Length: 223
Ligand code: ZN
Image 1 (cartoon, helix red, strand yellow):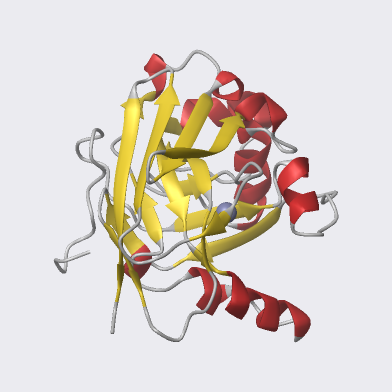
Image 2 (image 1 turned 120 degrees about the vertical axis):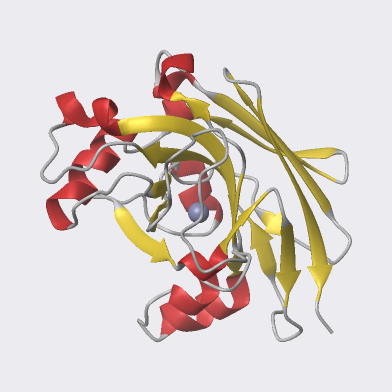
């Protein structure tokens, strides 16, 4: 984010992001590919605003040996709420988009081993790449969204939100027991299987249906 004001969400005029929340291990095939158990309750973490970038560039510092992409449906909250019921949860959604949850897997492994928070592995500058959003009325059912990601023209991930362990309404309801969700907050909803490594010069192209959302991101190594 370049300016001192809060970033406005592309496609959702007037909505400004204050918080970026994320869920981990929300597709069981992805949990298994990293040898993690499928969780019994949502695994939540957050990213700082400094990591947010719209259709931008992922900057890789030289001290990361295993940067990974995770392609995810991103939900934009449009209405403040606390203790939101699952029945009301989708009324709090302003729109849907795509994101790349960039993860320094090598650093995350070290942090997990030490039982430390994942923050540094997930929260670096440019590590939350986000597309433009479609308004919620363009999506009948957030559990019927298909999204794909190709790396340098080769398909790497296909997500079907019907396979989420915790559907969007449950994520919103659960998270809002702990924090007041604010208008403009973003929720990264987890990645399907197929995560993998990034290198300088890579081009990531993601698409989502319905909504015709696209996300194009370049990767650059910082020397
Ligand atoms: Zn993720």
